[in-house]
Length: 491
Ligand SMILES: *[C@@H]1O[C@H](CO)[C@@H](O)[C@H](O)[C@H]1NC(C)=O
Ligand SMILES: *[C@@H]1O[C@H](CO)[C@@H](O)[C@H](O)[C@H]1NC(C)=O
Ligand SMILES: *[C@@H]1O[C@H](CO)[C@@H](O)[C@H](O)[C@H]1NC(C)=O
Image (tube, rainbow, N blue to C red; front, side, top):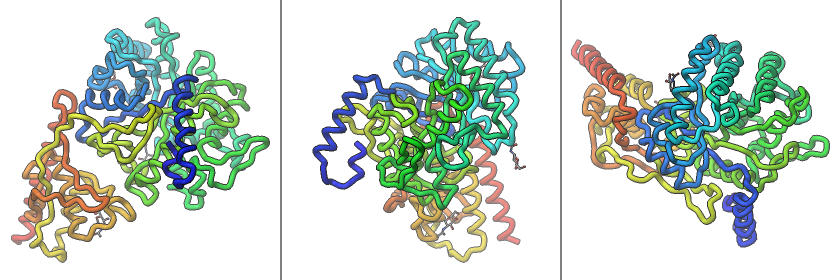
């Protein structure tokens, strides 16, 4: 497992250890691994395809960010445990209206339970205390949580379904870097504590998202090796505990924060953990594999962390890339998937099923083998070229074009072609979307090179996610742009 990333020596021993760990994984009931399934994609894979992918790879649970009917219906009779989510935008109404909370539970929990969907958790909000939200959800999260719990109890599901609030890991911190000095952040201390007390009283769980990658991204002095699980980093010694990876230390900072406030036994779920593969110099398949496989191996031992020995309950972030996500957090945000948009694994990963290889999605339907590229006759000095690229990049996806990213090595021509093609594919290969004032043309020759993949879009399941209105408005904008350029050049 994780040993693959290390040197070849001791391979047989490592294999044996891996085999023992896989056996003990199922025998000891070590927390099964789950996956986050987000759907902010222009062309999402059909839900049935995704559910088959999850099952083929031995995932036993899945975490959602809402309760879309297509997704929920595909999960019926799948046996997968489901965490459904209430988006932050719904917190205010859930907080102010018991009736709305009742309806949400009826429609999005009871309804699907009756249809054979194995719902186990309701996540109320998603990282609602994140600083980028400017406190917008500070006052509504707890009342929404209380109303949803009451609604579950009324529906007779109080014991069957647990509530939680997925939190970003910066709701707690430690001034010294030692986990034992951990506590909840002073500015939100009371807000977090009322939630913690309620979760403790009602049998809920504390869900936290832990991201060593983000620490590395925002802090150039962060010791990179500490992000991984190979034990190569300078350890942090905290009393009798020794930490060789950031995950354990961060997790135990939370345990200490809970303990200090009287809730040291509250169950913890890792709601998101993962590593992106593009959009930043530290985001690539090699490091993502090293991190994710290291984490899987870590939880497969069942050892837990120094402060909480035992199984770790976790959901990988994420299953599939999402090209419609906001890049406000960084260009890597669209590249967290273990899989590309079309269900191809980016690297090898063993999910704890003996001798298993990661399996790709089956039956994916692609559009034609056509790409949109810059015409070879166009001069790179043309002053209007940059506008066409900005236009494409603003509406499609150019996050693979930066410094030390998967397409960072392209020359200027190919770079422009990449932007054009991204827009063309996102608009379902419509001819109008390969215009760019006449600078672009389609080709049947794949421009992909090295690590840089010029994708072909997939067909989407029209029953679930065809988005006609947005596509049409894109066309209108292209036409408008073409017109503007025509006017400029003819004047
Ligand atoms: C159920 O969830 C969906 C998806 O998040 C949401 O759009 C819908 O409003 C919810 N239904 C109710 C009755 O609240
Ligand atoms: C938060 O505040 C910043 C700066 O004042 C603003 O740019 C941003 O739009 C705000 N975000 C939200 C979600 O209100
Ligand atoms: C490629 O395109 C991106 C996005 O427009 C731009 O930031 C970058 O500077 C370009 N690189 C080259 C070599 O043209």
